[in-house]
Length: 340
Ligand SMILES: Nc1ncnc2c1ncn2[C@@H]1O[C@H](COP(=O)(O)OP(=O)(O)O)[C@@H](O)[C@H]1O
Ligand SMILES: [Mg+2]
Image (cartoon, rainbow, N blue to C red; front, top):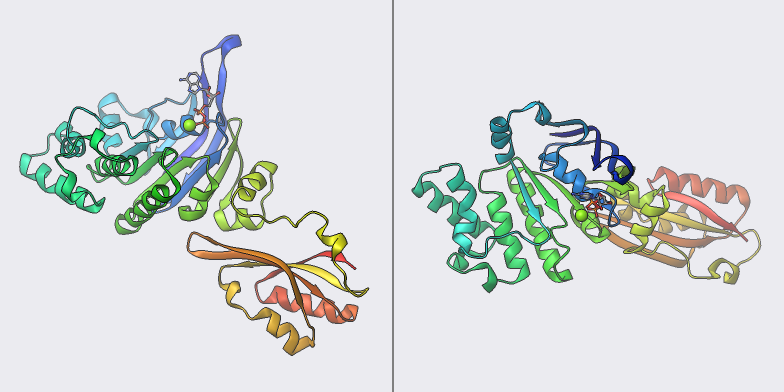
């Protein structure tokens, strides 16, 4: 759906040149919610603005549905952009016209007939939960409501892609969640492809299928959100995950663990379906082990459960080896983090 190929974007030239994007390639599939996360200045806004050529890449290609946007004429590009909606951190509504007219604006630009506009705007306002507010002005709305208007406007021309630049960063946590739920509903209802950028891991965890982590103009890590949670590679990714899901043990935890010599302290990582496995009971039933739970944390990553348990196992070495192999066969990762 979206193919970003070897994109480089440099602002300015010579000694004052800013290398905002230093060679990024990634693919977003139809119907996917793809996140790009990074700290401020990483190049996220520049990258997402390259997708609809609000910023023209210095080099590289942007292929949307098989069409290279870089090769289009101004007219063709204008048409192609109708199929790419965009929303922003500060909503970018026109304050002097009503909610209705803000949503109608793209339809008026594409010269849609009056009755079509009336019907479409009414539908869209209903979709975003603002049916009663058509005649209000943006200044009379809360931040969350403003973003709903912006979403309705972005959907006016039935886009196939929605780009979101920090769409929830100006909102409080509760409103953020309601907007994220709306985006997820729209994604499911229309099979709309969504690419979003954010500096908040919470956003990625709640709605994204896959994510790219950006640092200094480059993608340093990319994969399914679950995989990133389970196996973060870079310090940046680890920090983002720790900001919402603590996977570290309390200070001095392992030193304080008092277990019989020969015990193993094991981290069991549960992803998705494996969370339903009664694995501790199985360790008792099959291997006569008595695992004690020392620590753990569990969370929801989009529609899937993800978490870990730290348990102590005590028994003969070969029995422990076999039991850990068994755990692995159940789709649960087992890592011995400490030998007592
Ligand atoms: N129009 C511009 N002109 C010059 N430099 C820019 C422009 N836009 C962004 N930059 C620079 O490019 C880098 C990446 O910025 P940006 O894409 O906004 O990052 P992010 O969205 O991750 O915070 C920053 O160093 C920023 O100062
Ligand atoms: Mg930005």
